[in-house]
Image 1 (cartoon, rainbow over the protein chains, first blue to last red):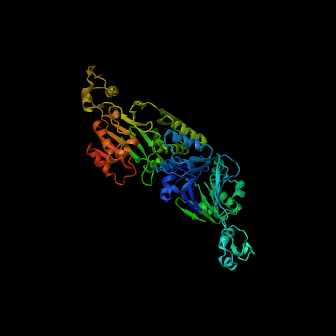
Image 2: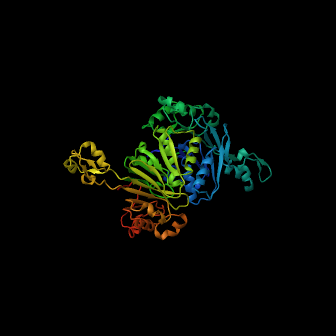
Image 3: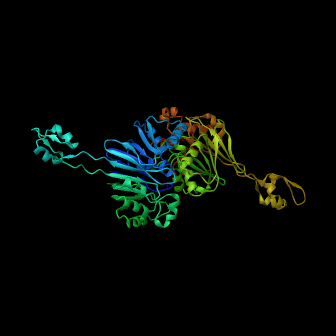
Length: 301
Length: 301
């Protein structure tokens, strides 16, 4: 899994800082997560192929998380895209985008499929044979979801020496990978576990922006390999975090610790801070394996 | 009058090229003309003070001319703006922006005043004691206006030597500037023209993007000091200009020549061209006083 940060600042785009957008490469997918103004330029800067994006996940309808979407769709149209585009977003975005296309008389040739979200408990919103995506209901000023991206458990791996020693016909390899016991060439059943190895443990990534400190997400994100959690403020500005329903670095680290995650990635910084190192220091005192998101930075896990 | 080009390319924002937006400083106003995605960042890059912008003119509702507006309004809100903001735009934009504010529950504290345009002949849309703004109906795929910005004729200037020689009391200076004849200290009337000078001729600027070749705009823009006219294509790609209702550099120059303008500024280039010098060469063969718009370039007239 590879995560590319296109933008990780809150509020307004500035010359060197972009509002929220991320690209997650997971199995054969390139998922776009949030789409603040300027996202299409950051996609170009980070050399993400536009045609690879088939699913876009929008956390909420504050502008710094979605104002780049209409332009991106418009660019897809100009690039004569044909592939379907799925957009998972709070109810309402479909109405805005449709109105913008109507007023500009710029309808897409490709299918634009909106999956409107309104549930307040976690739900499975995407699934194929390798990946699942669930919503993570967050606590913000308006209806907001984070997203949990999970690889599915892969097939078992053949232990080729054991398989050959057991005299199993190649026609049974597929069933072995699927976990079944199979007969050997003499018709005796072979225990699957004796000739196969466990698959690689599936990875998972949780994106949580924007939210107040919210322990109700712990069961959903428990044990993820990486957690992106917003930290708009540091602890000394907690009085700003409370009314705006944002988190401090310390709160993000507390969530990471309680959820037993592998790695914490902080982001969604207020542009009031010139030096971000204090976010890392503050979080590390509670959860040591913490990194700062930065526009253009990538994380592999 | 000082014009700052924030963006002068058509279609999609790219790493080094921005969609249409301009700032016109005229008398005590800072007018924003069109607002493609990324305009707020270009305003910062060009050090335009956000608080100075009180009037925004939107030519049409294609994304490359208006997708930056919702974000700019949102930023004004975050900057705790209090001053009224006037937006002159085709009917429909108010509905989009209002819907976006409703869905994000982000209403402005300042007054947002939409002047919805739908007339198909030129109309006066802004006027104060020093400036007038008229629409210029253009011929594009959707309802589109250019804008004519005109200084009003200023007051007459006092010829101080003549005024003193004529023994005119200082109480009459105001009336002299306004063009009236006034009495001297002996009660004899003094001819205004004998003691005052003509005011500086008022300047005018016409913004015409996007449009097919359209001679019906000639009477409206006749004699302007500077004309920005779109030239999305060059003549050899005229077959692309026709169905998309855009102009070639040659057509823009022909309009400039027939309208007797002082200076022509070309822009709204298709991003297919790596070398823009051919636009200038092509236009200059018909209208020599031509310049190429470039993001970040300023023009004074």
